[in-house]
Image (tube, rainbow, N blue to C red; front, side):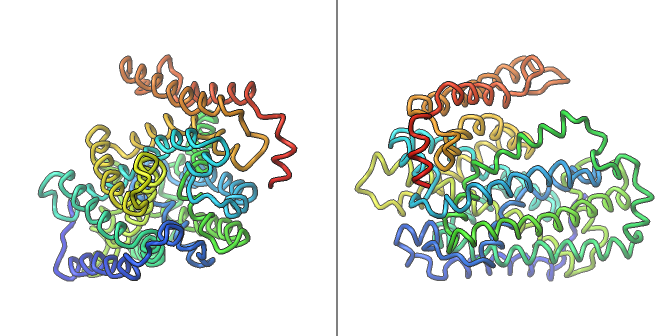
Length: 472
């Protein structure tokens, strides 16, 4: 299946991209002050904070659709609730401390606490962790669907990636903020429209609830407790996600950061319910045998939505993915340029290095798409390899309980990451039909996390704990 667009639909899509360009160039190249370029001068208000956090955290919309089409309401528990929990913990324990920290990025904060070498080393996994690859892939597939399958998706992925480089490079974090405020409105508006037409076509939620299979109505989706717990481990990503840190640091006050995260959680709850029911309507209206469940939302829109409304909904999908792509592209470029390369070229303007590195981040993202042409695989690989090594060093910057002695910071960053990578390589080399990446049936996330916990137990900086408490 592919989309059948008429001129008005194309006009809406083109208008969206033109509006992004216009929003991005407001003040763009004038933001040469580093704090202004990277954090909008730490003056982000509560509405802007909520808009950018809500929209950025939802870039994997096509993956969400695939899950809800296959498992129903359990999407809310599996893909939502663990992230609500860790987002709330982030708000309580980290958001205020991050806002009060003078560092402009995670590697800088690590460097300030553990030394410049540790900060530079941490920049490498952070740079790869926030690769925009999954979102480049999704946009490539979506444009292939819109254009009727003419041309390989990689061609469209490259075009969209380069477009994002253009407007993010010009406008900096201010461009991300301005476009995210537009995109969060499109997100909610588009899915309300899709559900309105789905209800008119099939019946209300009560009718749908009776028609879907029993596992769709089960909050666990029929999954085991072990499977559900795995998603809680994956949700630890929240603690080391640079987009959370960046927004907390950019808020106009610690109170804004904390309050904004809790309000964002409420928005995520609502949006998760919208997307879960949209996926279930996709199962009911399109049938249970879609060849590409990843495209259930575009396919449902193609069947249900009239001219013009269809184009608007596709703009919604584009906006949802683009909001995360631009944020991750900017963060990835910032990490490589400012936190890593600037150490080797100290006389070069850091904003210029960031802008150059945004293009490098896009190229790396495209290469990762070639290597792992699957959104789920990209999330799995990036998270499994790089989260274990980053978790305790980053938490230790702000929470004395997790503070490490300097040698153990290096051991954790290198050792835990290396073990997870090595375990994944073995799993790939000896993969079976049952275990794709899990060597000996053990997911690569766990050996890395085990080693990180071991280093934390034997390398905690207990002697300075009381002093660090006093420091805040």
